[in-house]
Image (cartoon, rainbow, N blue to C red):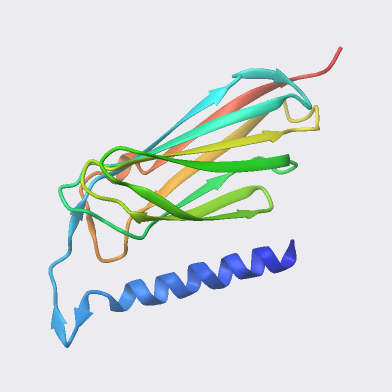
Length: 168
């Protein structure tokens, strides 16, 4: 698990370094591209017993006007999550989710192809063994490229919670 976490950190740092140089190609500065990235999360079930399986469906969309390949996302699960599984479903206008990283209580990845009106769905299943806290949060964030102009950053993060009850 330490190697996966370290690899993820190295990957994210390397991606940020590459992104910081992308606007300058052949010593020519390019104007920032404009994107409107959105994320939302559905949870199933909204209330469950500890050890029940939870399913979070993370929806990500590029409302453009420009395409933005290489967009990153991060989903943070509650500390103590177990039996974590993740899959990527591609929907809408040719969007592709290529790389998924599963860390301790988190999932991150890259949407390699993210055209205008493109949409990606990530499905996360997991279990929560503890009976406390009584509510476990999930935070999903879509990360626009450093040199893009995000037209509405207010919808780049979605926070939902599942209420935990005890087994009787």
